[in-house]
Image (tube, rainbow, N blue to C red):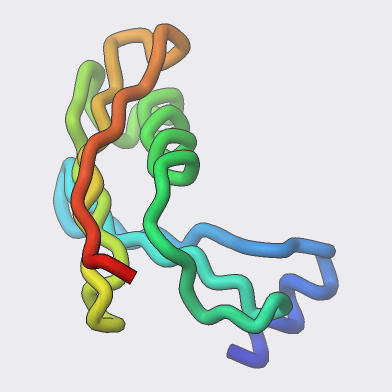
Length: 102
């Protein structure tokens, strides 16, 4: 990840969100932080919540919607997070999901 590390250092970023869309409501996500020595992070709610809200604002998903975010499958630490995005994302984003124990 030397190129990603250099880009992040140049901009002062600590972590980035890498997201690939599989279908209309299924996304694969990774949140590496090479400057901190991590090529991955544990699944947690804030990132999918922000991502769901951003997707709704940008019309990347229909509203209301329940997109699924898959993390860690390529690294043997799978998690599945379902994000509930209402018609107006400002009213609140819901998240539920599963992950493997650490």
